[in-house]
Amino acid sequence: MSHLCFLCQRCSQPLKVNHTVEASQEPKALMFISAQGETRETQEGGPPSKEEANFENLQDGAFCRTPHPPSGGTSWDYSNFTLLGRLEPRRSLDSIQKTIRDSFDILSGETEVDHPLCVDCTDYLLEALDIELAITESDVQNYKCCLETREWMSEDERELLQRKLKGLELEEAKLHQEVAEVEKNQESVAADLEAAQAETKMLEQQEKQYWKDYCKLKWQQLELNEELSSVEMRLRYAQIQWNKLEKTDIFNATFEIWHDGPLTIINNFRLGRIPTVPVCWSEISAAWGQTALLLLALANAIGLEFQRYRLIPCGNHSYLRSLTDDCAELPLYSGGGQNVFLHNKFDQAMMAFLDCMQQFKEAAEKDESGLCLPYKIHVKKGLMEDPGSSSGFYPIRTHLNTEEDWTKALKLMLINFKCSLTWVSLRYGRK
Ligand SMILES: [Zn+2]
Image 1 (tube, rainbow, N blue to C red):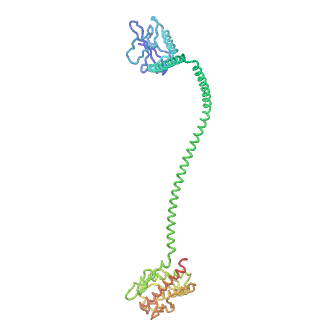
Image 2: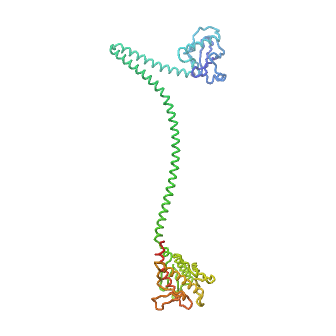
Image 3: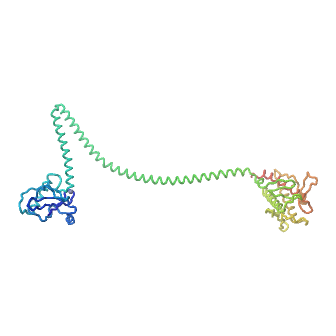
């Protein structure tokens, strides 16, 4: 067995030409074999051209039509390209090559496709030719029809059709012109389109940026709104508090004075004691502290500075400092053990306190809306005077005094303070 190698002229796949040598000198079969597998050797060495076809063991004889393709599957019957020649013994290799080449040239000349072709390409070509044939047959039918129509058509009708044809030709020319114009415009339109696309891209980027900015600002707005509502809430609360405080009297709110029987109470501390109600001395001292604070607040309200003493309120350890007597401290508190001494320091402190109160009274009386206290104060003797009472005078000291009288003196003093509170609230409280 031997073969010639060619390339498919459509897909460039290598093909092999086989011719079977029969012992009885019968015509040899010419076959093209798809070179997948069998022609690998050829592919690796570079596909051979028609002219470089390789011949091997070429036997004498002619290429003949092969009636039955040999079994083997991949072989292809090249019956369409049969070469017939005389069975001359000892034909040369060149002669055979030339014959094949010529036959391919003839085939290539008749069709638009070059030869040889592989099986797949041939199938494809045949299908295409079938379709072409069908179209051509249809055209022939149409032409026949037209000819028949023309025969029985009258002269007028033909003229009419001719006119129509001319009109259509004119229209065609016009349309061609329009197409040319449109094609000319197309370029400028394409340029416009490109520019528009670039602009669109830029606008999209801008839009993206705007959205970004918008979101940022929106977020800021939300935050600021939140802050604003918070501030508004605080403002409203402050306004309410302000209104409440405006109606509040600072003196009356800070100092509460009332009485429970013989005892007077200032800010929940009882000032004074009687045998039936032995108030503890620490409570009395605390009550003195509140009273001292009240007197100092009243003096500050009218801008009074005490002479001789300096009042220092300090809870249940409040005291007065003498401004004349070598800065001596007079305690306005007691543990209850002061009774036995004449002029003990607690008594001195209370008398000094009455002095300060008198100073306030005198200063307040000078004001146009003068203060008028119900009970007189006798500073030198340390007495409170109750004009409506039978006994009249009540000492503020504890020495040689009864608890009842001392408590009464303290009560009169606190009633005076209550009147002072009302007066100072009306006069100064709203300032
Ligand atoms: Zn092919």
